Image (cartoon, rainbow, N blue to C red; front, side, top):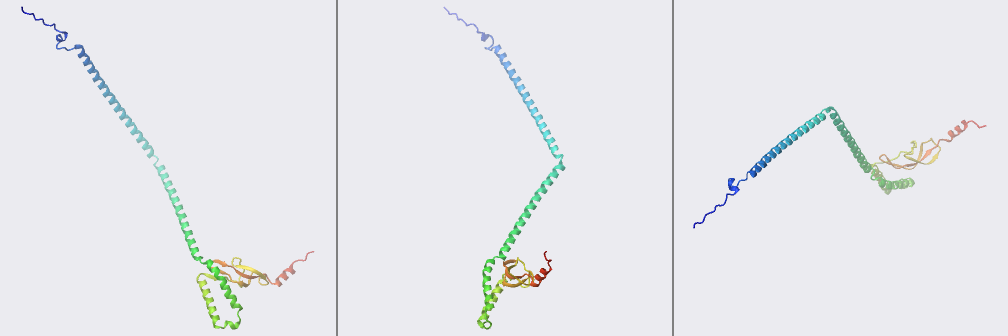
Length: 238
């Protein structure tokens, strides 16, 4: 007996043509359309943002241009301020330069003064030796002055005076001069021409224009006859 072959019934997938799902295909097409729509919207949004950015950039450039124009407008005022500032700097520089020159001049004067009077203290200590020579000459007997050795002493004295003179030392004038407290020191007052130096007790010396030692002098206070006349000329009291 032959066996009957039983064929299975066609499945729904085979009936629909290879198992394709019409509903799934439609859903896929819908999703694709939505994606394209989203991309289009995104492109439009990006285009809008770009346009907005360009507009803002244009506005910023316009604002900067307007600001620049506003700054360039008061050119006269800016030029005036620049000139004033330049003049102020120039004045400050001139003052600083003048101060510097004054400092240099004072420093140079100080150096010159120091050099001129550097030996003042040494010279002051030498002056008493000169005084001793002069007192010795005044007290010697006349017969000693003619001796040979005395000529040697006198020569030493003269060399000492020449050395002091070369250093700028000069004796202060006294006898017959009007008394000057800057150069003279009064040790006594006697009858004689008023306010005149009558005699010299000790010689004074200058170093250039500076007093090393004032001269000690006797000053006249007027004659007795003049005082008597002044007394007689006064009216009697009572």
